[in-house]
Image 1 (cartoon, protein in one colour):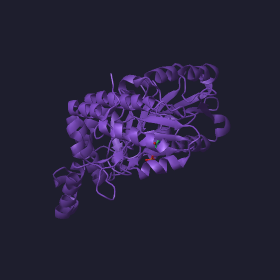
Image 2: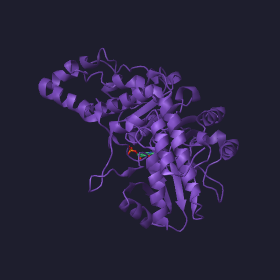
Image 3: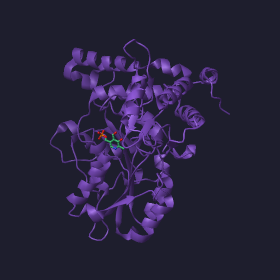
Image 4: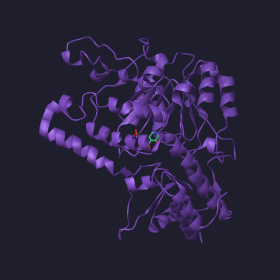
Length: 420
Ligand SMILES: Cc1ncc(COP(=O)(O)O)c(C=O)c1O
């Protein structure tokens, strides 16, 4: 199906219907102005060329209109987040009313836990995957403490078995069988930042709900990378960032999903602010808080228009390209990367990411036994931007919107050179 030649890679690029999209991005260059092999969209996605135009429009409207831009800008600032909702909802497989762009990722995770982690004396534990991203773990631990419990017994880690790298769903089932009555929340990072493993969201949600647990997901590494079909999974909430596969710039605003069955639930705790208040009366100022229905009701502050303009530019690229086509290319591109790495026949290399395309996105986590960070430094010197995780893993993520089969081929050639 694949061939280990540059000619084959170039042929694949010619056949690729998304090939033209690379042109729509700014690819980082070396000192000589040559394009680098950028495989780090799992950390920070590249800048669409459109972005500066979208930002510029807001800067111009701000210069020309000042405060009037809230209502009179070409894209008025008051409802600006609404311009993002439909595209964002499609990408996460949700209804528009279930999705909102606001705050940043860890902040959103806290706000979701304020509403959805309501522990009792007997049912207070939280499950996360053992190699959860540190910020998720810190957020969960601090919520457990905030409610007066001890993370030492309140936090349960869903771990891979000894000698394995990936978490098995049967082991999550066993944890729930034993301790389900004590577990209030399951909060899983999907796709896992380290291993690249994508977990079965619907299955986890159904399992959790069977034991009356709330189920939430952190889609930092999933959004724009896999189709999580959030509504259909039945998950209670999800949070994500927009600076990785959603290419919206460093520190750009995050996103949040609240399943529609919670949209009118006034029993939930909620930290509130004026942006979650009824839009019709928000500026009358002296009304009692009147919460918006749906995910919008969780907003607190008026959001950064510049950040949202960058998100709009990026989502427009996704709309144009079509997410189904993006996913289809992603599977083939990552499959090609996997094939070429296997072709190295290097016994030091172990790809820890699942082999099954349904259990991963575009990232492959390549363990290089007995390697250290020098390997990564050498790759950087060879104009490859990848990312290193201690103790011995290089993470590479060919992003289907701007990476080519040729990028993947050249990367593996350079990796081979560095390994030798
Ligand atoms: C899985 C995951 N959770 C949380 C974070 C922290 O994100 P932020 O700094 O935007 O809150 C990241 C950042 O990369 C992440 O990958």
